Length: 109
Image (cartoon, rainbow, N blue to C red; front, top):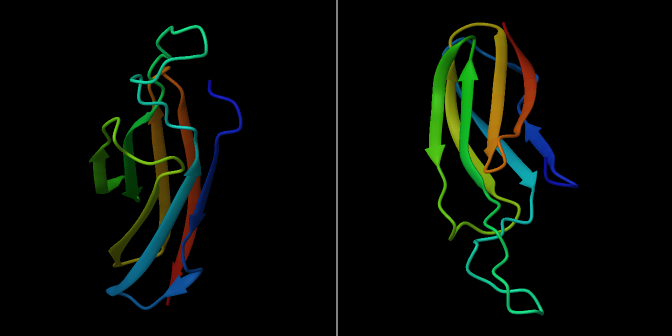
């Protein structure tokens, strides 16, 4: 597991049925591409978040594959329509096999 990795998510606490909301996510991660070398000339191993998913009540909302050219601390902003109250589950998949998760509930009235 990479050190200092911290996911952050911003989801409105409430919405109207069928409303489209904006979701913002950020994960603190160094994102090493694997193409740089250390001071001794040895390649620094690749270490990136290679996939990001968001589900709402078990249904996929977004599924993104990331490549080494992605920046440090990847940020995603996207829209989702919420038909009912429920929970968003966010997952970031690391090259080392780690999965970072965050959940946020939303109340639909």
